[in-house]
Amino acid sequence: MRPSSFPETWTIRSATMDDLERAVDMFNARSRAFHGQDQSTVETMRGWWESPRFEVERDTQIVLDDRNRLIGWAHVGEPGEPYVSLGCGVITHPDVADRDDLWDFLFAWSLEHASRLIPRAPEGAKVIISESALDEDGARKAGAERAGFEMVRVQNTMRIDLETQPPAPVWPEGILVRPVDVEAEVEGLAVASREAFRDHWGYVESPLEQSIEDWRQWIASLGETRDPSLWFVACDGDEIAGVGLFSAEIAGDKTRSYVESLSVRPAYRKRGIALALLRHGFREVYKRGYEAVELDMDSENLTGALRLYERAGMHVIRQTLTYEKVLREGEDLITRELDA
Image (cartoon, rainbow, N blue to C red; front, side, top):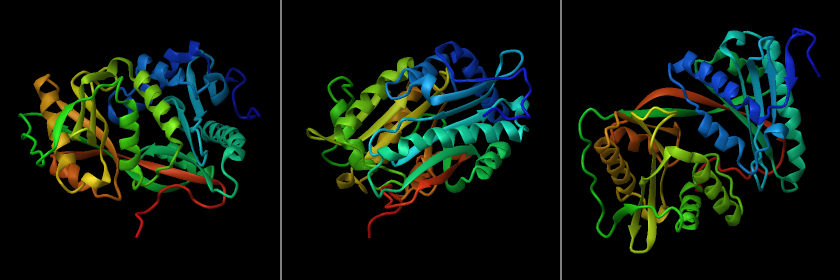
């Protein structure tokens, strides 16, 4: 329902593909306001909007002002089975960030839209919806809290500046590194990733077939940010022991690379493979003239990743808070702690 406080000149509707550029403009306006850099491109956003489980006209709500400028956005993602961890995204243009009524409308729409997915979760399972906000984004945090969300986790964005050539990696005996054969190894990447992330906070087990298809769709959505020469696997014979995937750019900035994924299967941990993958990737992007590498990670990672990244020379540049709201109580199928 349209809030009575909204100006009559504002338009409320679902997004369409015609809104792609104005959405990028708004997302970047907000990211520039907080950390001085763009975080979105038309290509990467199009990849997201065209992904099979996201229907832009079904899964979004936008608000346009009297200049036809996008000033408010909300979406609810389609997570796939088992539908116990739903995600939403709510942002406003910096020019109207003080409009509590706009935030409240967008969060209310998100909760209502998410409710249609609850029956798809297994009977008796707990269902949550999550949202994130930069630590300094007071308006977004306040909007989430008014909507009944509670802060549950902190995520670090970390960075290393490549001013000199990074140290050479030291590989354990029997472990070799090689580039990923993207087309042939999607299933192997999916299997290795599932094993590696099962004991990470927030992990939800999904059917293997869905995981493999998610990998295919994610790879396709990366577009030109994917450089196969910067994707590596650490192998023990024919077995994938660890994975390190580096991007070719961040939001069009070709001086910065991003660690899309770094993981080591449990059987191969505590042997230095993760550090070796990082250093191998750092040296490869340094050779190509990159000035920095960034990644995002859970600040309380259950396997101690923060110490690993600090040892590799990375430091925290900003923090993002994860908020959750319980939509249905029940058995929690989401990883929250390590098994005893």
